[in-house]
Amino acid sequence: MEKYHIEKNSVQETLMIPLLGRKLCTEAFPELYKDDAAVKLCEMVDYDFSELEKKANNTFYKFGALEAAMRNLDIQWETKDYLKTHPEAAVVNMGCGLDSTGRAVDNGSIKIYNVDFTDIIEARTGMLPDGEREESIATDLNELSWLDKVDGSGGAVFFAAGVFHYLTKDQVKALTLAIGEKFPGARLIFDTVGAVGHNLMMKKVLKNFGITDVRGYFHVDEVEKELGDWSDKIEISSRGYMLGYYDLRSPGVTGFHRFLAKAGDGLMKMRIVKMDFAK
Image (cartoon, rainbow, N blue to C red; front, side, top):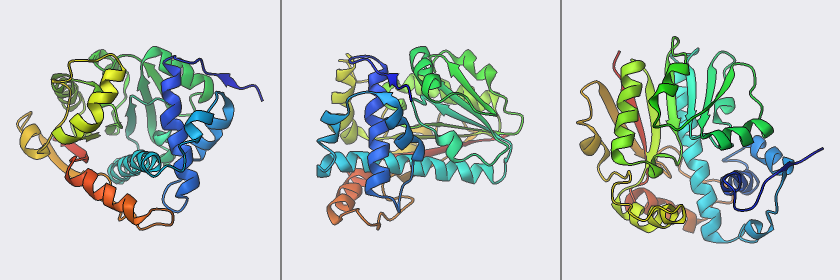
């Protein structure tokens, strides 16, 4: 099998860390999380994972992978909940990378849209060609005209995993209101952290991307209070994303992992936010 080459220090290389994280979670916590697509993709790429794999048994590195897995499971939970009443909805993965959540929740009748920058979509379609009822959209999320390509006639559920941290609060608000205006009755799901989480985690990550002034980047301490005035047509709720949906009492998850999870949901205010737009 010919492998897809990933250049060092390229945008495509940034896809490898979360991809390997999902593979490691599948192997370390098989009763909790399963992502066969990530395992297969790791085998398809020509990339040296050895440096990352050296960290695989490190408690904090493993927790980071677990964190990404729980966020993914939570988003799947909220998406499937929406699909119970909108079985032919559009499922829109914003900032998709190599994530295959759309396929994971596929009931056989949804329409799947994967949205990301052009070079990311090129890498994605090289490894994960669009399937039936699936479309990749190459764009900047802030160029709101991409919403015109989404068929929301059967409803629409939009989600962003680990994406809004890289947008300003004004950009997130503009995108949110545009979705609500164009897709009444839709649902938006995303993750966020509070000020402590932003300072401890995201400042370093953003600076690695050359972003030095991080003051305006999106983070929320009190979700319902801080975002509730965006529109009177949005119903907002949130849960901790480490322990808000699952108790993490699964083989391989240690007591220390659960302690870190509690700190993440509490001190760092790691949340899954759900916004339901009025019809």
